[in-house]
Structures are given as structure tokens and as C-alpha cells.
Length: 238
Image (cartoon, rainbow, N blue to C red):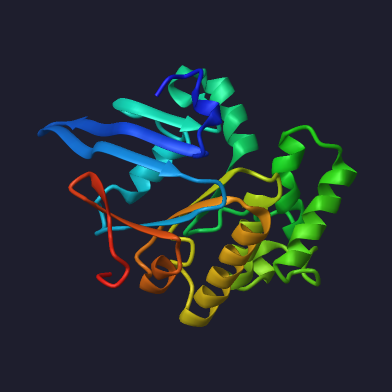
């Protein structure tokens, strides 16, 4: 894959021969072993695997939160390895959204302030940032909870705020790591419905690492990671 011609390709997120290893007292620990992945615009991809198989590590590399030992990640035509830390931070803030198992909301701010935060970081004027935040919070069913702080919201509502925050700046890819891992079945199903509906409406790609079979089965594509290798998985097997 050439750096100049990539922009015309269909995928919005690509990993090429991605390796990640950590050095410890017992020698190198190889977590990822040559992972190749292409994600199309608007595609939902679920990654499953045992705990410690490398799901979170892969998402961190795809999101530019960590750098690979070898290999490349290409996001929206940009080779992340060629970017400085400052450039990488800028690309993350504009092109990516993140949803984690724990919502990571700022407890001292209201729902609308939390959701507006990515836009304010980009330099958007406060009034416009709040307008967009209010709009997407209404989309996720929290129009009556705009000014509630996270401590006044249920777990499911907190995760819906986190999803709204991940989408408010119109990223091309959202990376979600066990997004419903802390929720009961009812709230999990509600969150899954919301995520897939928003993915369709906004044509944003979702890459989700999960242990939740119900969530994984709903994705356009199901992949399994084992011994640091990523392979396709038939949904009927999972």
C-alpha cells in the first residue's frame, strides 16, 4: 500500500501487519502478531476473544493511543506512524470517537458540558458546541437530562452520554471497548440498539471489542483474536 494512493481506497481504517510486544523480566511478550484489518465507511466490526487475547491492545493501536512495535495503522488516508504526537492528538480528536467500558465522564460537568467538550477542544465557539451537544443528546433519548451531572444519571444513561460524546464531532470511526460491559441485560440491549442505529444514520464505522455475544452477532462482520492473530469468525460458531 503506497502512502500517496491510499486515499482513493474504500477503507477508512486499515492495519497492516500490526505487531505489538512488551518487554519484561521473562523476555518479550508478543500480544499482536501481524494483524491485518480493513474497515469500510459505515461498517460495524465486532472483535471477540478471550480476556488477554489482545482486543484492547488492538483498539489502542487503531486509535493511536499506543504505537505498534511493527506495522502500520492508516486512518482516513494518514499513516499514524508518520505523525508527531501533537499531530496524532489532532487526528484523534477529529477523526475518532471512543467508548469504553467505564464512561470516563467528567463528574463535575453536566451531560451537555461533557458532550460539548470534544468540540470545545477543537476550538468551536461555546454556543455552537452546546447546540450540537444538545441535539445529539436528544437523539440518544436524554433531552430531559441535559443538565444532570453523571452522578445523577443511571449507568445506562451515563453510557448513552459517552456514546453521544464519541459521535458529536462526526468522526469517521468509533472504537468501543466493552461498551456494555458494566450494564445489565436491558440497558445493554438499549445501548446496542442505539449504537447500531446511530452507525447507520451517520454512516460512521464502529469497531467494537466485546465479550457480549448479543452485541457481536449484530455486527456486519465478526472477527476473533487468538494468540495475537485476527481471523474471520462465522456468527453461528460464536
